[in-house]
Image 1 (cartoon, rainbow, N blue to C red):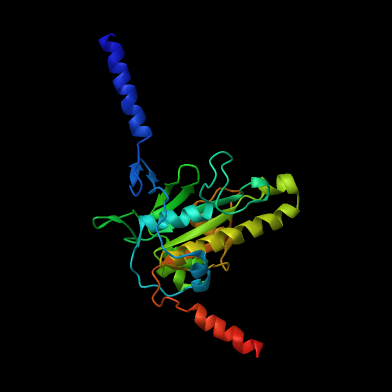
Image 2 (image 1 turned 30 degrees about the vertical axis):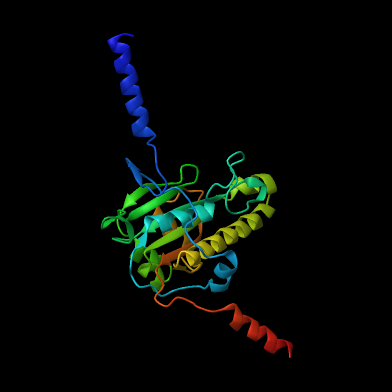
Length: 257
């Protein structure tokens, strides 16, 4: 084997390593403006019954950061891959048309990566197939997003805000006007997944639908065909919601008398 050919193989292998770095579960890898999120895994001991029981719309947050692992699992619950053959996702979609796109508005010192380091404040777009965040623009846009959402303070005070947008054409091209309804059903499925995963992780969220669409789209640099439907602030609850099945069942029993 010639020296030149050997050198070519070494350089080519190095290039592959740089563009496609190997990643361990729980590890964060940064490639240019892309954050390869920690790979999804079972992280909580809460069963689905408990997550449903404790799910609440949480608007008051402590101001503490969330972790990159928590953000990773919430995004996976929202739109993550759950079938590798057909690339089906965590939430159902009419005809697997998948019209939704997710942006994340990250605050300053709001997402802990490790060793007192934080994810850079900015607007990121979630890449479903690479389970990664791609930087759209730098800066803390929570206050501006809150203004676009009629000054709802929980948007400003949350560690991050997930903005869910719809590309209606992906679904209406197959189902016509009925596809609009399917898109709205789908964003509800995704929102509930975010609620339940946040609850299981000890975090809080609330579905926000009151905002100026064009202003929100401008803040996140949405594509022209991407229409914002939900803002979901995520943060550490100031007052976690606690209730037991015993209390719920006592209520049912009283109503049956």
